[in-house]
Length: 74
Image (cartoon, rainbow, N blue to C red; front, side, top):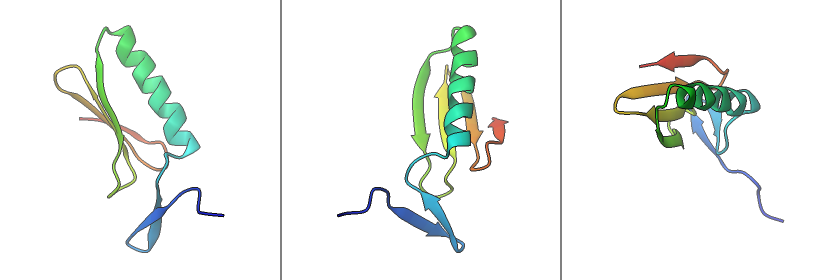
């Protein structure tokens, strides 16, 4: 039986190939709120280097969600 999920190591910590439960929930909440502002969601991506969820909405709204669920609006 093969592995269900591969992991990349960054600084000794494994970076999961899928978002954590906290990241998934926060991604949904962020996307819900962005679409309430009529901003289109263009990209949702898991950054393989850092493990952050990257969301690009509208022309210039960028949201990063870290492994522990912290949201940063850039």
